[in-house]
Image (tube, rainbow, N blue to C red; front, side, top):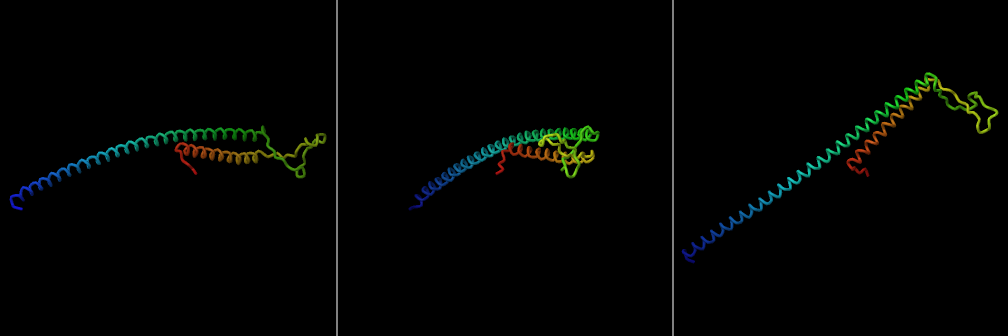
Length: 170
């Protein structure tokens, strides 16, 4: 090949390479722009989904918090009512309006028995408790009742949270 034919061929090849390079660059730029647009769309969708999920969780938290506060108020009312009843009972025991007794076996305590009563209706021997002992036993029972109320409130709170957040325990 001569020099004169070589130059135009080299020029055509060089122009073709430049055109190909430019077209390839445009295509790559378009692909990159499409990927960036898709990434931006996915990021916006994810941000929206996150905001919606956060709003749902915050609404659940507010509802659960309000329900727990109601349960706590109810527990406080129950405890106040029970204390009032216990105080009234203790006042009645100390004043003698209420007398407490426990059954005893007839061998340990002389009991008044009704000899004319039928065999199934015989009076049972009983021993009366002094007011201080009755108050002490009532305090023990009251503490147990308070603990039971508190445990029931804990169970209710647990069930509320489990049901609110749809937690599976098994």
